[in-house]
Length: 516
Image 1: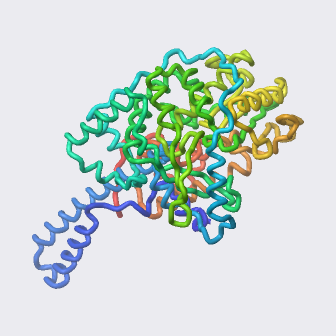
Image 2 (image 1 turned 45 degrees about the vertical axis):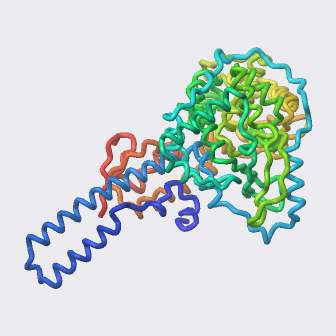
Image 3 (image 1 turned 180 degrees about the horizontal axis):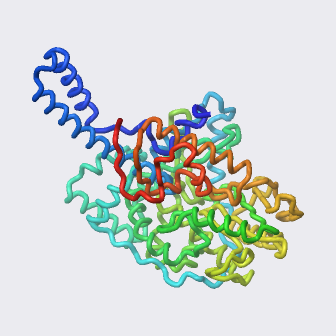
C-alpha cells in the first residue's frame, strides 16, 4: 500500500528537495574519512575542526530542508492553478492512443470556444456587493512583486521566457510598467498578447474529447499584467464576495466549508441532503456578455471592466497536438484557463447565482446559525453544492439553480452530478428537470467528507501512508507545518499518534529539523 500511495501523489515534492550544501558535505566527508584512515587518527585538531565544519553544514542543510519542506506543504493549495509548469510536465496525453484525427480535435475545441448567444434573459438580482474594486495601479514595485510570485517558465507563442524578464534592469521593467498602465487606461492589450497556445491535459477518459482540459498559455507580458490585477483585487474579494464562495479568495479555504458540512451533519442527523452540481465546460462555456453582466453586478469600475472584456475578446488559439501546433482559430467565448484572473472572474459569476438565491429563497446574506435551508448552497469556484433537508422543497431549488445557470448559458449535467444523504437510507430523491441525480454513500465534496464512514477511512489511511513515507525519507524530531490541514483531513488527526507519537502538530509552533 505504501508503494501504491507513495510519490504518485507526492504533495510535498520530497523527491525534488535538494540543498545547496550537498556537494560540499560529500567532499568534506571524503576528506574527513581520508584524514581518519590515512593519518591513522593522529591529526586530532584537524579532524575535530573538519567535524565541526561538517556539523555546521548539517545544521544549515537541516534548516534549508525544513524551510523547503514547509514551503512545499504550504504551497499545495488552490494557488496550484497558477503553476503551469507543474501541470504541463506531470500530465500529458499519449497521442498514439488517441482515436481522433487532428482536425477532429481542432474542430471540437473551436466549437467549444465559439459563442452561441449574444444576450441573456437572466435578470440580475439586487447586488449584495457593497463596493466594487479599485483600478490597480501599476508601478515598478508591483512588477517586481508579480515576477517574484510567478512560478511558470513556460513561454507563450512569442517565445519570450520568464527568465528573460527576470534578468531585465529596472529601467526596462519601468517601461513595461508604463505599458501596462497604458493598456488599462486605453481599455485593451496589444493584439499579439491575445495569441496563445493550448496545452491539452487529460482528466479521466482521453477517448472523450470533453474529458480533456484545455490550458491556455498566453504571452508572459499578459500573465504578468493579469497576475498583478488578480493580486491587487484579492482584498476586495475577501471583503465583498459572499462567504458562500470560498475559492481563490484571501483568508478563505474549502476547509471552512468542510467544517461547516461536518457541523451540519452532526447537528441534523435526521435529515441532510448534499448535491454537487456538475457544470458542463464551466470555464470554456462562459459568454463574453455573461462576464460583463457579472462584473457589472460586482460593481467593477467601467474602465477596468472594459479592459478585462476587451482583453478576453477574439483571442487567437493554437492547440498543441502531438508536439506541434494546430491551425489557429479565434476564441469568441470562454474564460481562459491559464489566465491568473480566471478564478476571480468565475467567483463573480457565482456571485450572481448566490444573490439570486438570496433574493428568491429569502435566505440570509450572511447566515449566523447552523440552519441548513438558510445556508442553501456552498461554492468552490465553479463547484456549486446545494445543501438542504427533507423539510425544504430541494427539487424546486435544484430546478431554480439549473434554470438560472441555463439563462447564463451554462448547463448542469444531472447524470454527472452527485448526491448524498444522511442517513443513507433517506427517501430524499434529488432530481433536476425530472432526471434523478446519482446517489453515493458519502460524497467527497470540496476535498472533504462531511461524515465518517468506510470511504472516509480509506482516504485517511491513504494520507497517513503518504505522511509515513515522508517521515521515512526525512527523519524529523519536531516539525511545524503551517498548513497541515492541506496535508491530512481534520478527522484524521486523532489517528496520527498510532504511527508517530513524537510529533505534536498543534502544540509546536517553532521547529527544529535535524538529520540523523
